[in-house]
Length: 278
Image 1: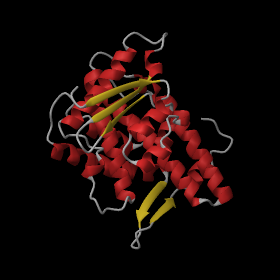
Image 2: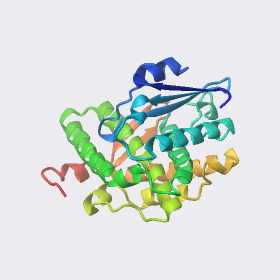
Image 3: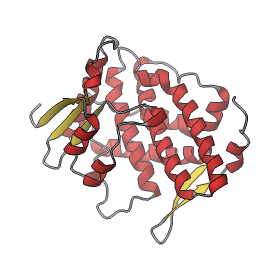
Image 4: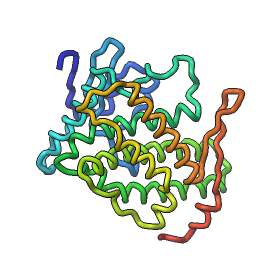
């Protein structure tokens, strides 16, 4: 615990903003994740090697299932241990300092986060699957509805920024959740949770399943691992994420002038769903 500061607070969002070194990130940080829930804990690493762990006091509220608070703290402790061993994939310092945050960077960052969540959850799922595993079908249901709404609005408004940002946020949430699902599958030896066929066809596919299977090959957080091994895995997952997003019907492309183009590949896939509920 040397160099680790623990803050348990009822003012979680502001506590995270105050602890974070990146002023822009802090100013835009939001606890609420909309249909995808809300954050309850946050590990914030600093350049001097110290760590802030901010936890929402609601974690300790009455009425929770036995072991839930302990599991939250164990999850965050694994994140901290990864950072202290220099294995944290989502560390901004691992990126090229002059690199623009383009299409490839977006996919790699999402893959790094998903892979790290897999590593952290894998040891904890030896006793029982995580809550995210059971919630995955509902998450995909919400994702399906969000993409449908974004597609309809795009056809009405022709606002590329709105659909690009919306898809980015929704896909990031689902991609991160696959790290939790992969951990439960690997540790507990269980199958992918059952997803309604129509939703599975629209939101998953062979590349999504391949990304989950690739994460299952990564050593868990309680096994010290060379960061080169982890980076190789994250790179492969990123490529699968890119193909997965194209399966859903979208793509980001890096342009020669440094800008980013967003392609809507399959508009009819989502517009034909109007009025359907399957």
